[in-house]
Length: 281
Image 1 (tube, rainbow, N blue to C red):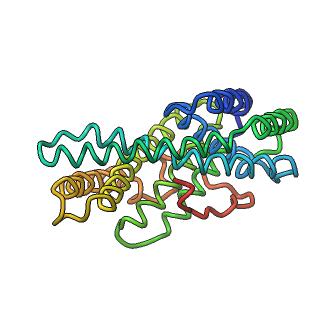
Image 2: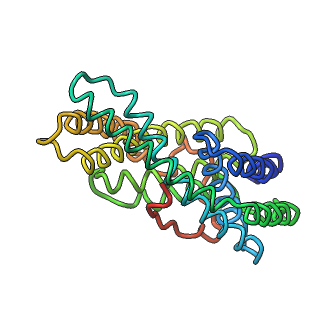
């Protein structure tokens, strides 16, 4: 199955718009859109294209720097939203204190992001985006669904229980597989496959967001015996972990060539190896 021309064009156009919005106002939604846009472009150029040219390599390098800063800001936005949603009567002052500290940390990280997204950098990225868009061709690209399934097949080979470390790797791979699959032309099979990946991605992402918040709270307030707020966060994170495992397990239990998957494994050269890192979060 080939790449959808409409979707490949859209990723360039949308990323340029999101870049301009972020440089003028780094609100939470603008930060999030930039991160997902850069990830999608990385998949399109780095996984689905046969080879990166010099302009594409430089473009992805520039975007990676910006995404790293945006990621640190996005983590705080998610933590603040989760903390504010937590309704517990215990330690209200500590909760307020932690929110205040996270808001101040976000302010400092926002300043760093704005420095990274200066006018010269944004201008250069936009220029390279246009060049990459003009030179991109769908004809020589790989099958998006086959690439997505290859990503999942590699991590499926990891045996053993679903530990936090393995769940974290699944979170990254499932996200990348979904972005790859979304470049496919529309079909019922592709829609079903993407929907399954999204359900898994949402559950894994929700668990990870609360895990990071729990770790942050422990750093600021102390461990479980020192703070009932931290103890409650551990309880919530444990429940999120169990749900993530329950959502992921059905897909992990069946062979990757199961008929529910929309295509057979590609016989072409395997996609570039995935190296999960903290910046991939």
